[in-house]
Amino acid sequence: MTSELSPDKREKTLETSRSNASGIKSKSNSAAGFIKAIESGSKHLIMKRFTLRYPERKLQFVGDGYQYDPKRGVGIAGYRGRHILFHDKCTGCQLCAIACEGIAEAIGMVKVEEQWKQNKKAIMPQIDFGKCVFCGLCVDACPFYALFMTNDYELSSFTKEHLIYTPAQLAIKPKYDGDVELKIDKMGATHG
Image (cartoon, rainbow, N blue to C red; front, side, top):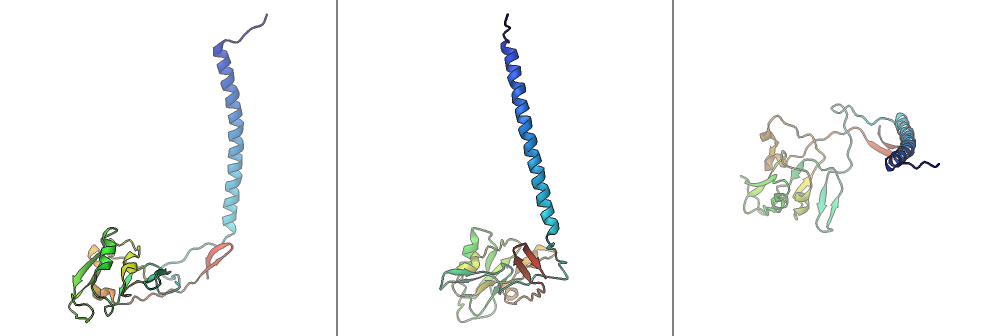
């Protein structure tokens, strides 16, 4: 007398065998994941921390900031901070404002009191740093080397109106005193 399993019992038997196999698989995955996590965590115990006491100590940047060389058609690497405007080179062509138009609309051309021989319209860019995304397209668009980006990143203010820099404010070169040099080696980035 052979007893055959009913279809319901066969299905239950298959389900239990599948769950046992996947349970063993998931336990081995969780053990491997645990070991990997411990390994990663212990690696970071050995590394020196990269924390600066910010207001007292600042990183020292290499170069003068992001610039664009239209003759060679390449960007010169540098930090993308606050812009600087050279009034004696600006022609009021509005290419910086056109480049910014589709991205942030942070540049507006305003009338200035001073007269420059190359700027017959007497208009220059005014930048709203509340809207600026620091992409550098305005610097790339300027064919007369009139607009650059500096290493100054401290642009905080209490009101939105103080984030709008007039052409006169953009002409002042920011003072940045970085005293900590960045060192990169095989263990990662450190500072001295």
